[in-house]
Amino acid sequence: MGRCAIPLAPADSEGGARCVMLARMAAITHIEPMLTDEQPGTEQIKILRAMSGEERLEVAERLYWSARKMRAAGVRPQHPDWPETRVQADVRRIFSNARS
Image (cartoon, rainbow, N blue to C red; front, side, top):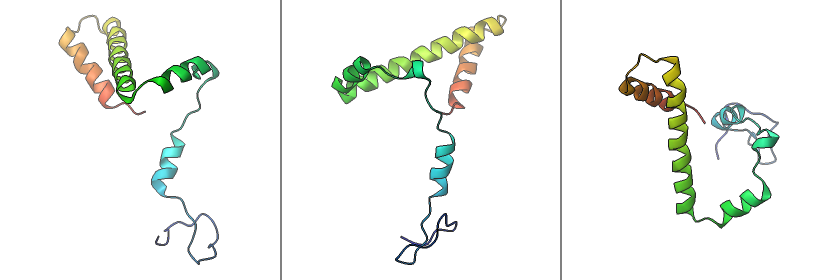
């Protein structure tokens, strides 16, 4: 591996600088700890581990569409004069700009 532009520690025994990629550092800054009540319980973990990959993807897709429906339900009272097409366009905009 080549030398890092920004060394974070003195050179190691092979003479190369130990460093962390900037992209990793940026990703770490966006990690937020889960609240205690958001932590999955042991039973929930057991159920999720027993699911196939396909089943987990189906669950994730249902959660995604549920979140979009909830967001649309939140937009409607804020903009009661908007037609449904405008509400859905705003929900698309919100979700396309969302970060995880």
